[in-house]
Image (cartoon, rainbow, N blue to C red; front, top):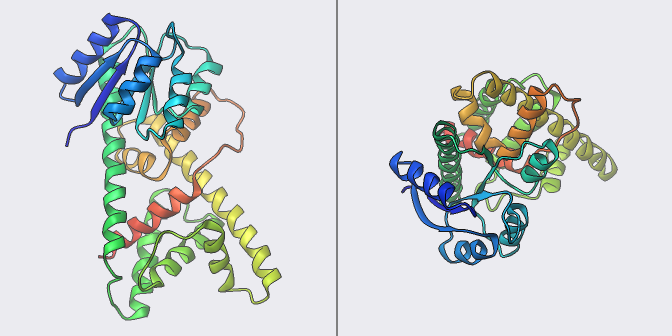
Length: 296
């Protein structure tokens, strides 16, 4: 299945150039185009494309406002912002609004093709994750002797954490314990709330409720630090080699790609590090599913 696009830009020449690049390069199918934000909201709600390429500045309303309106009506596709503006604050605001990539004007065929190839990879990985979740929901856990299964899931989890360079982080031990706990559930339902997962891991070593509560909070902090370290490691690889297989695998699969892009931008500009943000639940869900996939 090919990826579908809608192009939103008040400049007809830009719309035509993007349309030609997408279809001539075999990058997907253009379902429609719009010359303004108001028109785009109605068109996108009707066509529901996988990806929207949207200009930042348009006469009727800007791209960020249009994205906010689309999110409000529960459009769940991806956004790529197009603009000649290079203001850091505006670019940061665009990423915070939920865009995945940024294409600069004047439009350059090579840049557009490179960005859309990355978007295709991200889209494919997300479909892979969705299909994996559906498969796990339908299948019972494979019956094995408990000790052998624990060793297998632990080894699979350790391999993934080693590959991301965080096996020595304190939070990695908690992540492995969480994966072992989830694997031990004979018929896994929906992924549990993070608080419940932290408490389940804490309960293995603590007895009183007050100790469990304290350990749960400590586990949350250790895991967050480990995931942030993983994000830094992957972003560093991306800065050196954007086509590195490790970056292409882990960046879109384990993280929200806008967080990876912002981390890369911060590292590239040697900005003062901040705490940043990461989607812990997404990381742990994918971590569990990939570890389970490795022991099949």
